[in-house]
Image (cartoon, rainbow, N blue to C red; front, side):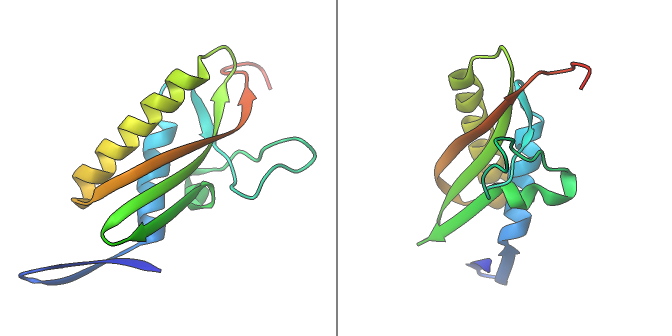
Length: 122
């Protein structure tokens, strides 16, 4: 599925995977986030940590009438205030996508799939 934008010069199609990769890349750069998790929930009580090539597996992009809704599945670091990390991720992803795509972002919803120790010997 692709997002279509029309302007005076023609038509632009942006794949939802591209939007998901932009959002995922922004998320993992945020303070307190260990990584992205798969939207297909936990196996045996452990959330799967996704690599760069799989960010789209942890993001759901929905669009209707020119507005986007983004669902993000993340793993946060142990000892951080989850509500602050989530709020920071929401505002950062919203800003980045609006500036990159020039579209209105209706909502950025965060689903915390797990907590992991940051920088520990795992």
